[in-house]
Length: 113
Image 1 (cartoon, rainbow, N blue to C red):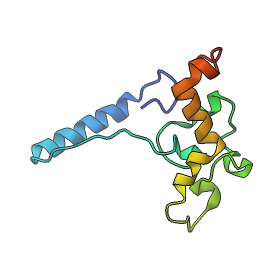
Image 2: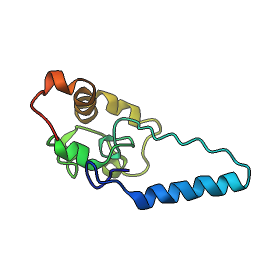
Image 3: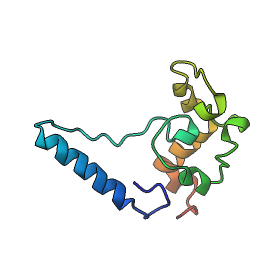
Image 4: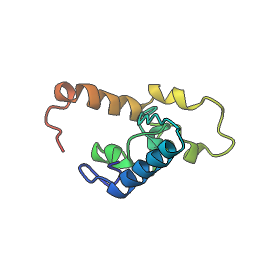
């Protein structure tokens, strides 16, 4: 919901989700919203976080596949091998982002938004 940048919430999208959930409720359908990610972001070979998170720490998301930091569907093309995305857990982009997310205060104490 912050695809444009930190603190820039997409209220139009949130309203849309609210209306979808309400419509499902009108028909007696329960909805489970699971805002999770896999392998950090689409730009690191999975889905989840917006590209600005990688840009913020110095990755050039337009060249991330070419650099070998991630295997992306956009870079690899079709057909994308089945279950290729989990290999990105061992690549630079995802490893860097999770290190900063979970241990940034220790390993990059001067990095702030």
